[in-house]
Length: 97
Image 1 (cartoon, rainbow, N blue to C red):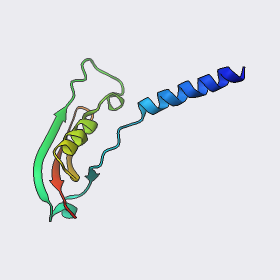
Image 2 (cartoon, one colour; image 1 turned 135 degrees about the horizontal axis):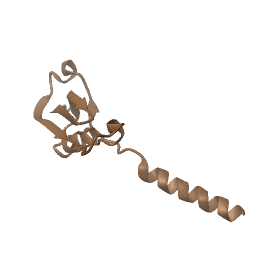
Image 3 (cartoon, helix red, strand yellow; image 1 turned 60 degrees about the vertical axis):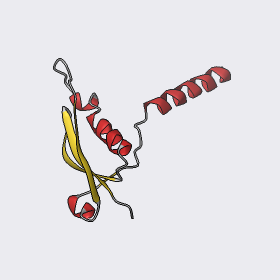
């Protein structure tokens, strides 16, 4: 019985590790904070959610896509222009402190 408990605990821990949100090194900021930084680009992503869904916010990954692209461009900060379940856009900056 004790082995089953440990096996279930290990299984739950494994699944919990797989479902955690990705962590990004890009910081979210306001425009006045990045006034001295170098502008890189404006990034936007949209999501085709398909048929009507009751809770689209739980199924959308556009925010993660924007943060991932900003990280790939070498950005250190993003300023959100729009953040909705169907689409998001942000201006990305490099601030070399």
